[in-house]
Each structure stands twice: as structure tokens, then as C-alpha cells.
Image (cartoon, rainbow, N blue to C red; front, top):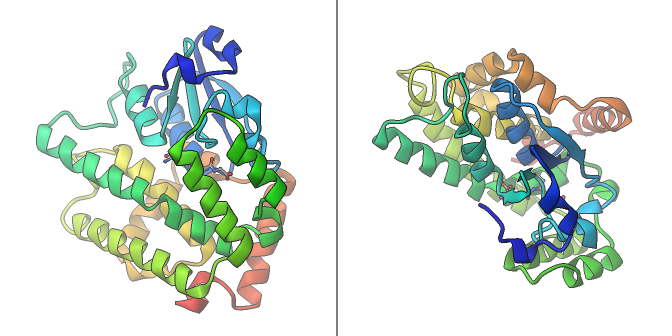
Length: 280
Ligand SMILES: N[C@@H](CCC(=O)N[C@@H](CS)C(=O)NCC(=O)O)C(=O)O
């Protein structure tokens, strides 16, 4: 989705030439876009956005994307948001490498439906991430941050929903019931993918596609949360195969101190039996 110029108050980006990606290493939606860029060998200027430091809630970032989320692609001064739309846009750029989107009309329709389903589960992914992957104290946004987030930037219904989600999370955390509902929504989606893999090696067509990228990211994040992926054995094998692709492994890796902290937290949740599989 392309944002119109009049929403962009951080005007400098309108002069940026070439491809620029505003993203965060640990953001699932950013990971999807970076994998496609890597798979297609597309060069870009990287602009990390500090989500844990709430950089996305401040006026400079909201002047680029009033929704207050990453990723954002800026191509020759034009701002694109929504990771799945960005994937399609990038895939359509001139390239000698094969497309990740099928040409066939029926297949394209199915891909669109599957991507919409994946996008529709994003709040469930956030629920499970904030409930089981990121320590609560790191994940929460203060009332002051949320008030400023709500007030800054152009009015935007999607940002209002963001603010409401974070307020609710700050007040209630992630109750087990909410975690179970999110896991059930994923289980339903994964059952559909499991069926598709019954008689074919790829989710669509005869090679890797955008669906492998999009669903890989969810599978990886749910695995970190402690989702019992063994319930979907073909999908689990498919996921393991994708993990061997260097671009996939690299873009979900968590290097540095942040990665160390998250791995330690993961061990703690395992030892204290408070992973997602322990509440299902
Ligand atoms: N539907 C959007 C969702 C974008 C989204 O929610 N991004 C997350 C990171 S994966 C974000 O920026 N969260 C803001 C925050 O953590 O405050 C997309 O696909 O791009």
C-alpha cells in the first residue's frame, strides 16, 4: 500500500533515492521483507528502527508511517507500508530471478487468500510474542509513551488500534485464555497448510514462493513461544528445510545482547514450565 505524499510530514524521505527499508531485526513483518530482498539479491539502504526504545511512536517515524509500525519501504521517495503489499511490490521490480508470486490466476487468488489469513493473524502473533517470547517488562509501553503515540502524527485508525492493543496489554498482560485463543487460530491455519503439503513439496506451485516466506516467519516465532509444532508433522519438516536456507536463517537470527537476553528468557520459560505448550 502506497501512502499519499500529504501524510508524510518527515519530508526528507521524499528525496530519498533508491530502495530504503525501515525495519527492526526482531520484527516478524520486517523479517519477511528482508528474506525476499535477500532471496532476490536486491540491494537496499537499511534504516533500523528501535522498537524496544519506542522509536516508532515518535513524531519523526510517525511522519513517515502514521500507523506507527514497521516495515516501511521508501522507493525513490514513495512510501510503501504493509509487509505483504511490500513483498508483492518488491517481487514486481525488474529482476532476472524467478518470481515468488505465481502467475496463474487460480494460484494467485489462493496466495492472496493465504497472505490475508497470515496478515489477519498478526495480532495473535503479537499476543504470543509478548506473552511468551519477550519479557513483560521489556515489552510494555508506559502510559506516557502511549499518550504521546496516540496524539502524534496524522490521524490514523490503524494507529488507534495499535494504541488500544498496547494499553490493554499494559493493563492486563496476556491472560492464558487469550493465549489459547491465539494458539487455536494458528492451529487452524496450520492445519490448512498441513493438508496442502500432503501431496506437494511446496505450498503452491513447483518451487519456493512468498507463502513459504510469510508462513515461515510465523512458524519460527510460534516455535520460540513454545507452540507444539509436532502437531503438524509435514509443516514441521517443511519449516526445518526452510531453516537451512541461509537467507531465512540469517534474517530471523537474533545477534548481540538482545539475542542473548531472549535466549536466556526462553530457557527460563522452559525450566519454569511457562511456555505456550504448558498452557494449552
Ligand atoms: N500488517 C502490518 C503489521 C505491522 C506491524 O504490526 N509491525 C510490528 C512489528 S512486526 C510493529 O511495528 N510493532 C510496533 C511495536 O512493537 O510497537 C504489516 O504487515 O506490515
